[in-house]
Image 1: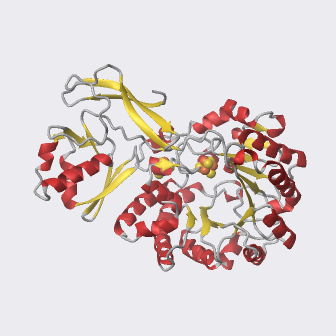
Image 2: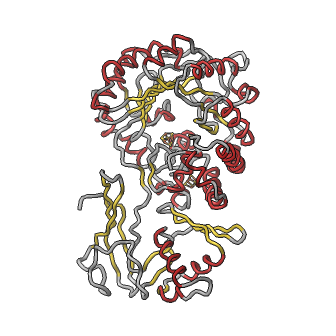
Length: 535
Ligand code: SF4
Ligand code: SF4
């Protein structure tokens, strides 16, 4: 059987016979699912029973079968309720006292008939409950290893998201700019721009792609965007029947009527950087002379809305207590698609690291209030679709065991899902890594095939080797398959190595656990979640 061997297994059956083999995972293109099976290293897996490789994982346990806790469970308690997380497959349950005491009995191998002897529930209910725990991978069987596949990112081998930093300079001087954009800086050459587009289309047009124009402020180099879009739409739009989405990430202050016509003609989405209400936005997003930029940004945003140009808002949240005012303001501007980013610790956003590490707890606390706020908002507007980073992706990871997104997965999508280009044509595995020269992949002007360059790049190999098992703290963490070790770029920018946890680690630790309790506590959240993404 072709497939990827993901782990060797060594275990003992309940008669203590030593067994070994490998768990083989194969990706089924048609169903888009991982399928797993065990290949034993001998013909007969165990002397206790005849060889039976086809026995499905879901086969109900027999009465004599020994069951016990899956390895590495994380257990925490709130009052009379108990959260159990199985980190390897990212499954979790919350049990009341009665069923928790039954679960506790299986800490060490016990035959099913003993577990069914339960004073709290009928045999049928207990049996259902045990089957449920087996399916959730919380309990396991002594003579079978877990066949549940570990959480894995979707196998996308070549990038589909390309972020092109076309200019270094910006007309703003935001205090936390991660690109440290100067007021006058270098701009991409036209030939470099077109070479990037040609290379992307030549190598990657067999899949749907997104091209993002970034800066500095990209509208200061609108001639480059125009040339690239004309090339994309007029020459390449229908190659292989795939779609190419185009996005401009801008502060919106320079947008004029001509730009709007251009965005419409070339079907361009526009993301606007806006930090919520005027007093919050103007604290950091200022001109070189210190004057606030809110009025100019909002003018641009309104123009885009009036003309129905697609796009959302990107806000940087500097203070945890400002989540709700920022989200509320953005919702009042008529959009339910926005990102709430924590300040990035790169460029001018480089602040006291201890303070940054500690802020995670406060962000996690306030995030719960934000969840309440958004759930109430959604409740009174049935059918509304809300796409809010990072809430959507976190809820998705709590309720699904595949990881189709670029971030919060292990390894992250840097180099395999995304790619970033600097103004001079330097290539990086992700837009967040642009400018971090130790992780430069190459330069577009010296490259004949982007695909080949990526395949041969040792930088890409290094970045892809950053998995949660290669990071000491993450390898032991119960949230490792929910957060994926956080952002590679953030970890590298702060610690100088790929193999450290994200600086926002404590935010992830607290928030994933809090969200589990919230999903359990709020009966309406499951229903409302439909409004928070594709569940
Ligand atoms: S970054 Fe933190 S929360 Fe995420 S896996 Fe690593 S240790 Fe766990
Ligand atoms: S480096 Fe960070 S932003 Fe880039 S794909 Fe990885 S996690 Fe996402």
